[in-house]
Image (cartoon, rainbow, N blue to C red):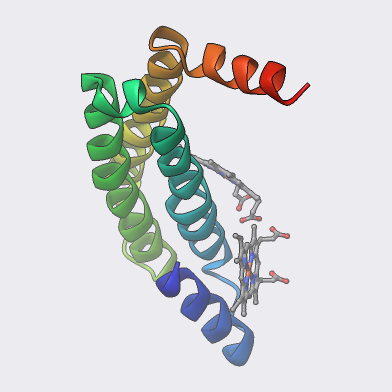
Length: 120
Ligand code: HEM
Ligand code: HEM
């Protein structure tokens, strides 16, 4: 989060917006999505204990730096970064797919529905 915010500030100060995508995805995939997933793991501990949860967290945290760093390098003029961008993005996508399967299989959705009923 701090890195994404600092980059946003640097972009604003320098009026150079070539890294807007990098800024947006550090904050949205690296901070917002990760924070929401973390809160869901606290609310639904069965999902946190599942092997799928472990795979999601590792995939997300390894894939995103690769995706972000290779994209930033490409935007800064380094050629031939596409395969790394593709590999990092695919790892992030697959890990979030595992997160969704985890919620489906380990009661995350039931839990949210039960919480709704309790509030009524
Ligand atoms: C210190 C705080 C922040 C600063 C200084 C900042 C700065 C910027 C700048 C300069 C741009 C480029 C605008 C342009 O191209 O015209 C931008 C775009 C963007 N920022 Fe930030 N930002 C900040 C916080 C955040 C946060 C917290 C998020 C999300 C959690 C965020 C998400 C985005 C997104 C999605 C875009 C792309 C918007 C688009 O494509 O139109 N930013 N930001
Ligand atoms: C595997 C993960 C992801 C990939 C590969 C991806 C890819 C992309 C691409 C190719 C663009 C268009 C960039 C451009 O036109 O310059 C884009 C824009 C955008 N994406 Fe994603 N995205 C991912 C995840 C997400 C997530 C999880 C969110 C929100 C939580 C998000 C929010 C946005 C926003 C707000 C924009 C417009 C910001 C901008 O102008 O740079 N993305 N994304």
